Length: 199
Image 1 (cartoon, rainbow, N blue to C red):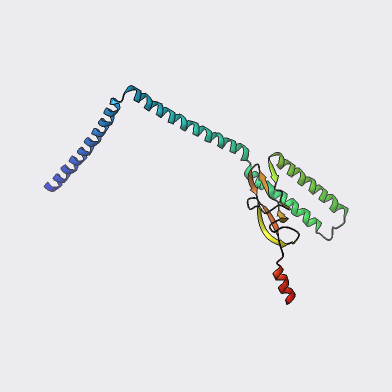
Image 2 (tube, rainbow, N blue to C red):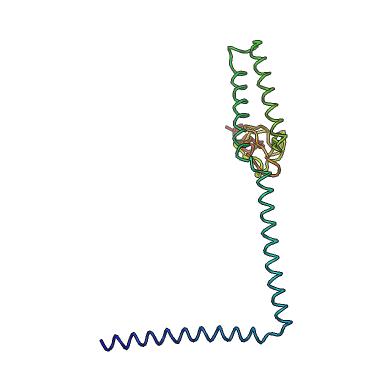
């Protein structure tokens, strides 16, 4: 019991000493501030004011940029979903063109004309909203714009040149909306040809 009281007194004394030390530190800080000359106080306040102003200005610029991005790229996900409609139109045209029963019929020609008109209207609407198709054919493969899906042997073109577009890619202003899925050229391996001839 006596030991517990002594421990409690020691704890209380330690706590009081800590509080006194903290109070002394505060007094020292205040006395240092009091000791500052008026010019130093003015300089200190000017410095604080300049920092606060710079922080406010940075925050204003950040908000301005976020607002501009929201305005410029707000329809990004809607635009990406719209590209599926264009893909489906292309698939429908290809399916109709490859249908043996409909070949060389007037109905097929008219239908394909209508599908082409719809596709052109959609592309022009996208273009008005700063969404443009990536030009890929005969371009050098650019990993920022293209995704190579396969290689096609072609000695007439330089290796890595886009020779076929599997799925169209699009840009929204300066951002990639969707990469082009492409096939690229590859030189035939002459060693392979010689080994085949030898066999």
